[in-house]
Length: 118
Image (cartoon, one colour):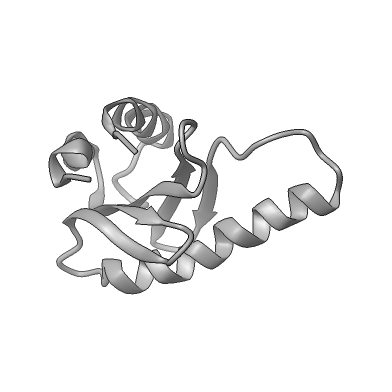
């Protein structure tokens, strides 16, 4: 994984940081930005979010997959998007809520996902 695969996310309004994460280990595989955000900690913590949601889907007997997860904080948006080609790898994106456009962020994540090779 290369930082260039997610570098387009840096152009999103309100961008704070982004990374590609291996949900099996919780380890960050690539990152960009994050000067005011510890992306290593975010990667590990959000791995638990992804695993919990995947477990809930299984336990509910749903034949479905996660497209993205949105976590709304007072001052930030955090988006998690598992890769369609490899659901145990995800892109994590943090945005400043005051400046972010969620529609553009979700679109940006879809585009970035296409450039990531698992």
